[in-house]
Amino acid sequence: MNLFSCPVCGFDQMPDPPQDYTICSCCGTEFGLDDVGESHASLRSKWIAKGAPWFSDELEPPNLWNPFEQLVRADLDFDENVVPTSATNQLEKLWAIA
Image (cartoon, rainbow, N blue to C red; front, side):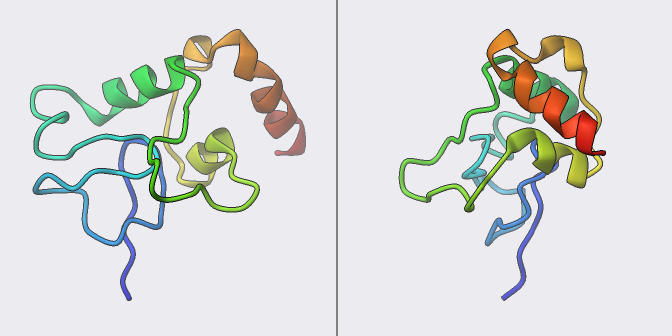
């Protein structure tokens, strides 16, 4: 089975490509709708500003899932200044490891 990556959050276990109204289970972006007129980077910043929460109620996040590690692993740029204070500890631990 081919899996696809979300260009917004870097979730790499999407069963369908990020197009044609596919919704990312991780960040909740609905492709072909949310990304019309808004860049993936902008959608990423909005998701991060909310604390980078897991979106899906039907699919559980991967074991030991860390949204910031996911972003780094996917090599997606993000502005650390939009990370909520409640999540900065996760990010600081990640930078210490890297």
